Amino acid sequence: MRHWYLQQADRTREGGGSRGGIRTRDGEDWALEIGQNQYATPDLFALAVLHDEIVEFLKLYRDESALAAELYSRYSNLKDAAQESLRNKG
Image (cartoon, rainbow, N blue to C red; front, top):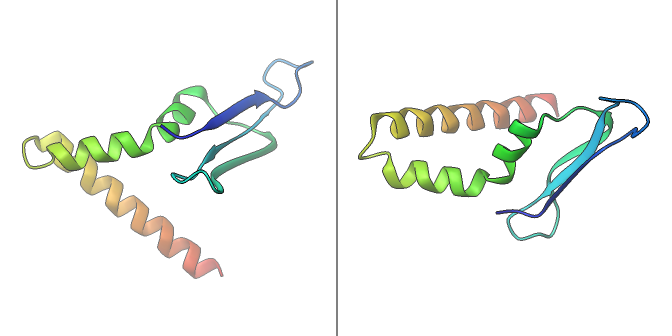
């Protein structure tokens, strides 16, 4: 599990945005950084924190489970599409 933090950006307002981040696997940089007044739902944030374990699980069981195979395939395709999108914006 990666090191993370998440806090409300404006504690005086309910839902006033959030800031936070999730470290890279080696802990040297941020894999995900949420700036002030941006929003992050705790459920999606938790999935991002457990990213490494989830991907490892899907890889391990993709030959035994049609669901694991489908999820890993979709994950790989979305990751590739995101990388391509970043290349096209630069």
